[in-house]
Length: 143
Image 1 (cartoon, rainbow, N blue to C red):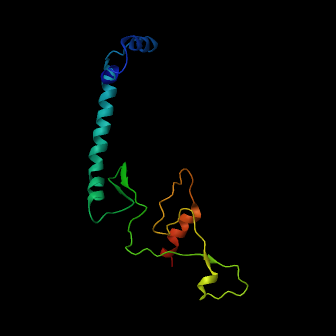
Image 2 (cartoon, one colour; image 1 turned 180 degrees about the vertical axis):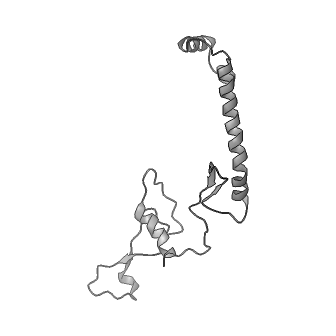
Image 3 (cartoon, rainbow, N blue to C red; image 1 turned 135 degrees about the vertical axis):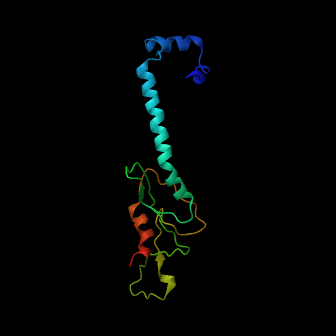
């Protein structure tokens, strides 16, 4: 608060203090509350040490809880990434009797957010979730 008080004039700070009733005095209850906050933060940092070691290691373990209390854990949607990316390409044609070997008649259906052309910028999709595009990305991994 002392650092932020430098940003405001003394009259503004006096008005805020008047709205709050007065400045808060350090009582035993406030000291105990602050000590409990510091202790909880220290416990969380101490319990997070194995998680940080796991994240920085080359052999990460994903979706695992560390410790019996299960306060901290790792979550990984991408536990392993392949070096080769296989893509499912959906094509369609308007021809009455199209043959699959004739490339001139077939047109690729492009998805808005599914990876495809390498020269295309990644799209801005927030706050939407393009579920079909997302599922098409996982389709080559299935059996």
